[in-house]
Length: 317
Image 1 (cartoon, rainbow, N blue to C red):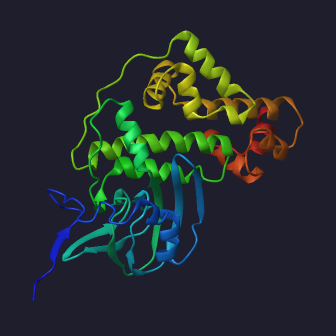
Image 2 (cartoon, rainbow, N blue to C red; image 1 turned 30 degrees about the horizontal axis):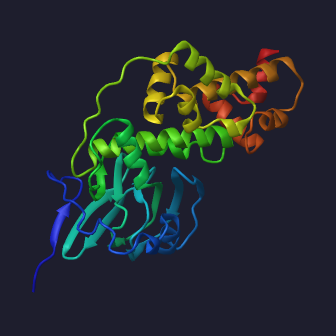
Image 3 (cartoon, rainbow, N blue to C red; image 1 turned 180 degrees about the vertical axis):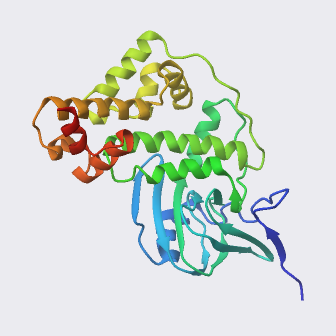
């Protein structure tokens, strides 16, 4: 009787490629990642946000898992905010063992399938990353077409883990800010995945040089617009005649902030002006700035200033 091949996923010197990474089913028969995750985790996500072009970000807390994850349409990138838990992934006769903990990632390549055995509860952030996004980021950065993604099981990667952790902080706040942030984050994660977790690692050349004065002014005007439907990375980049990849880097070179951080700062300043100079209720300030609730606005305000909106207003008057 043959013995399964064991891998300690956190210490592999040469990580193995997925044995089942290419879809064996027609793409139309692959399951959406959120649907398959709900099936195997037997629960609903605590929070989830998605759009048609950037996949989705979801925060789950689930119990023990002993099931086969069927092939999915998206790559699933995971990290673990809290707790420590054993992970075991079995593909054929090969077994990868890792630990879910802070600072590690797990990657399930699109189209792959494996048996998972997790003995206890897990707190996990998941990004469902479209293959088209990887291809677009690679194309915009003028790097070779991305190869296959590596399977990862509790693999140390504090950079990717930190990006995914930051995504959890903005789910359910301001719809516009959240959407712009998810677009930026998805591109950043895709860049990191191509550089560190593909079959052929890709080197990204440093990019220097900011936007022209005219392009920067146009971007700022659009970000300041009250028409939220006009604000997206795709539209901002198109106005500047650049790809999303190059626009984000050029905008930060010019302003010192990413588009999302710039817009968040601008809205914070608007909130401060309204709180200081008017008697408008905090609830109406939240509505004016596009937050889902007064609670979401207060949490975002305190995170940036260290004070609640009501405490800040009292101190400034």
